[in-house]
Image (cartoon, rainbow, N blue to C red; front, side):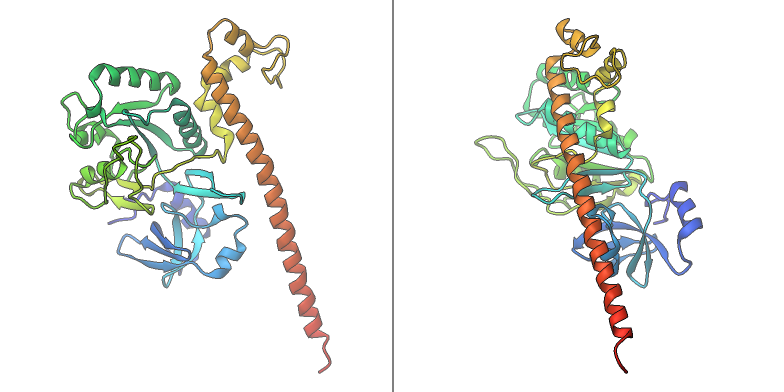
Length: 361
């Protein structure tokens, strides 16, 4: 493969010309095997690469460590440099620690997959779309398992999703029947998205059919799949790690991801694009800092009263806005604590250095 087939473009070439040491070779992270072991592809070969402890120590946050899809500079199978990302899909890491978890780096399209049987949740889709827009990628919604519902139900679902995702492509597909329900093959339906050198990430809950879709596009059973539970149609985890997979004849790359039980907002910059009608109305409010909670001249409240704005959409927006604000406050506090810790460590090292220097010979 060439670097261009792996997704290399002028954005990264400018960085190569400006900052990468001659001895370092650009490579793309194809898989994160374990804490400090990755698999990278240089265009000539795919091989293991290690992340040295100094790299981890110098990273201010977890988000500054390499993730699947990243471009890195490698010297003798050691990762020494991380290229600035063109896009990123992140979430707040699970647990009590305030940290960014990078799900996919340098992706052009994020395929948000949800099933039409019992998995369709508009509020959750809004959360995914806000996160995709925030990271700079293009979202596409795939409504899977169209073979399990009738045509009318599928049409209604597409209309409901299109209403909350203006400008976003929404497709109903069946990976099991390998079609889109309209007589077209699944490959033909998705072909316009699978351009050579383009990177796509596949995200969604467990059991929606991500691994099955990956196998269909690959033309072979590479990803393990298991059926959903009979009792509640809930999914089961089958994919356990993120991996960047070349899609053969298409020339594109697909990043399959484990199912996510939760997606907490890390960056709120995508709210404006996920809720464009609220942003448009907010621009008409009397006060620029209007909170839409009873201030005079609030265009958003007026639209709610007139039923021109969907109350469910507004509640979803408020929930994500509160979550983003809370996350931003926690991020600032965590960053200050990390900086304080780094300064204390640095001062201790300097003090030890002077103590060693001043010891009697």
